[in-house]
Length: 96
Image (cartoon, rainbow, N blue to C red):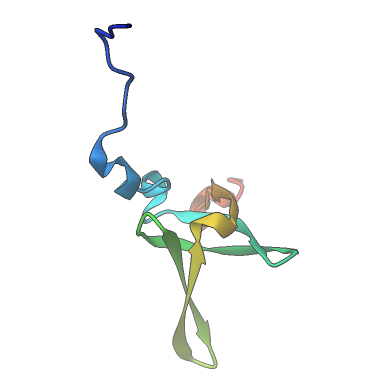
């Protein structure tokens, strides 16, 4: 007969709903992901993280009209997420 005085640590019940990439929300990111056997890349602002997938949003102007592209990538397909540091134009220009 064996007695246990300390239970094994367990994750809290809400841990399965926590999002992995919440620290990137609202930031410009590059996501590398798998689509079948092909590795692809997408850039945009991380708009949402549901805990099961991430959503990127990118806005641009084409033919004088503003367009928005939204991409949803499931967690199992995500290979890497990294933040893109964007320099502002004034900072990027050399001072003479």
